[in-house]
Length: 79
Image 1 (cartoon, rainbow, N blue to C red):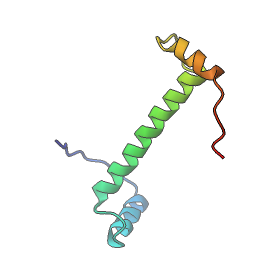
Image 2 (cartoon, rainbow, N blue to C red; image 1 turned 45 degrees about the vertical axis):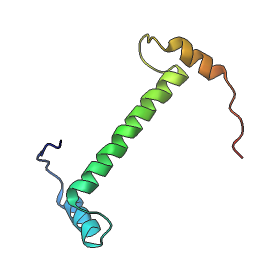
Image 3 (cartoon, helix red, strand yellow; image 1 turned 90 degrees about the vertical axis):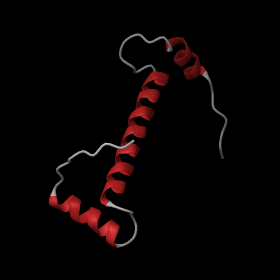
């Protein structure tokens, strides 16, 4: 299911969207906005996870013990 919403964007952003679509680098304006929103939400989740695992999360959390254990673990080199 999809829901149509109305978003106001700066003229320059709309020009950039239109350029991507005209160049064939995006299917539509909506696809670019959707991709950008999905990337933003993934970054937010990753930041939340990082805060939890580094002990920077505000307030008590039922995964605090797991986060403390994870902080003490060493990671193998990926090189």
